[in-house]
Image (cartoon, rainbow, N blue to C red; front, top):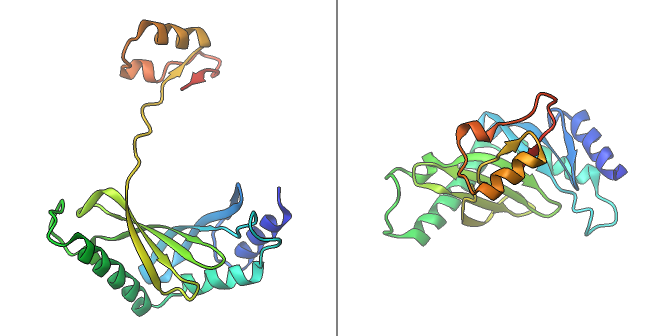
Length: 193
């Protein structure tokens, strides 16, 4: 494990920026209180260790602190800029449910990079099958917005008690039922596909 990630994790925790931070791959993540929305949001901090020699832990923590302390006015400006750009791009296209996009945007996560921040939103009434990604520049000012199709097609997870059961299922060509989805032997070992 990269010691710079451990240092970043420890500093984010010490400063109270992320509650119970964890390390996964090349980033640190965890829940954080975001003042502008008055609640918790999942926050990822990516020091981009693949592209940089050593991360500026202090600088990243300062950026996270500034983001989490963003004023309600600055947050409304980000939301307004993103919604206006989407509405301009969509124009008179039909939407799932007529409502003000500004009221429909639900912040789901934030990723802090060295030079930018990426915000991910759901808009369940207007764009139920999409994820809205908003890019902020290094000064935490709106830079760009993108509406991406949601990729929820993970398929069903089937669990079998043994490799033989899995092979039987595959060779029979049988469709899965609720009972087949969670078959496992008493030992708790099984094969998941």
